[in-house]
Image 1 (cartoon, rainbow, N blue to C red):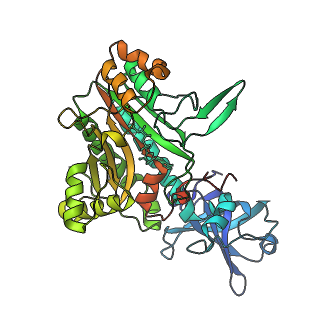
Image 2 (image 1 turned 45 degrees about the vertical axis):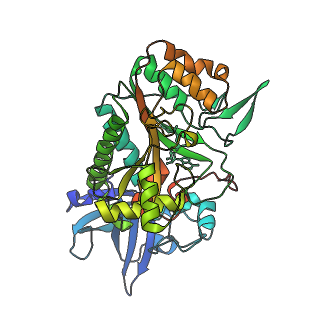
Image 3 (image 1 turned 60 degrees about the horizontal axis):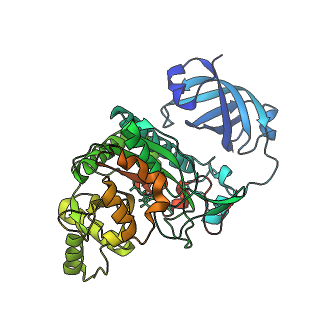
Length: 431
Ligand code: AMO
């Protein structure tokens, strides 16, 4: 007898099959009939139990079971089939009271309580859907880039220096010396690109000692990074991301329709993404909302307002905010030739929030040295990073997307922690 997934049952009408599942809900009806909802990672199906088998009294919600039954067609169920249960074996029972109900439309428990019992929340279809969608986002990211002849790389997360400036570094004891947790694969992805792999990407954890507990920052996040050599300018990077967003959204439409529906999520319209320079944005924000920018940078409110504006004026939920101030971007960012207090940098904003940062990088070793000094840093301490720039490193650029931010925004979740299996923040280090 074949072991099948619940979403394959309709291909087995009239046959006897085996399911590996958990009990979602038990509904006993009068007389000799009971209904049990069975769930596996692919869906939920109704099992019809007739007679009063011995195991029925032992059964509880969330027990792990192996069920054998005949698949019958029905118009009463969304799935179009149900299972006439013949045999059921409880392979692992439930020994303690559940911390919350798992078979209601929502888990009615606060975020912290849910995170304390994170693995159990995965028994809820809506929670599970978040991680299915995230898996497909990352899968699409990889497939798109492989199609563009990018190579996946793996770079160290125990490092000797920070890359992004600022103080958000986690320090650790490394034998007789000090090391840090990597904030970003930034230097390595550039070095490996210039080394000859030309187009590279990485999917890996990045670490930031974020002091503030916000709904969009964590101490550890999965960063979808890429770097591309031989670009003509920033526009090549923007065009690549535009095509990537199209690809990811098409992929989600095709593979995650039911998960998106569970969250009532509507994917954005893709296509041309408006590009607005920070200086233009400053003028728009002042004119339309009376908001002054004090730097060539956007705060949270500015990101939200410009997204509102672009949606209204251009009908796009995405916007590329470009040309951030030189003071506001790290030393590896290419200064703009036509406007030296700005840089060839960008953020992609989506539904009011920054999804990713990126830029054309400095590739001329002399400009790099000057740029490091401009930031008040010592070029000598970046010698290993700088080496490849003396050996034919072409113009290049790239960006990094926060996987959880993208998942959060696509699904309309309130807090980034809902899109991370085991979030790490200022106050949470377990489970
Ligand atoms: P940046 O520091 O802007 O750029 O990070 C890139 C993207 O990573 C996500 N992100 C975070 N997600 C959750 N918690 C955090 N604390 C957090 N910090 C950042 C965001 C952000 O847009 N090296 C550059 C990228 C590049 O230029 O290629 C960098 O790390 O989605």
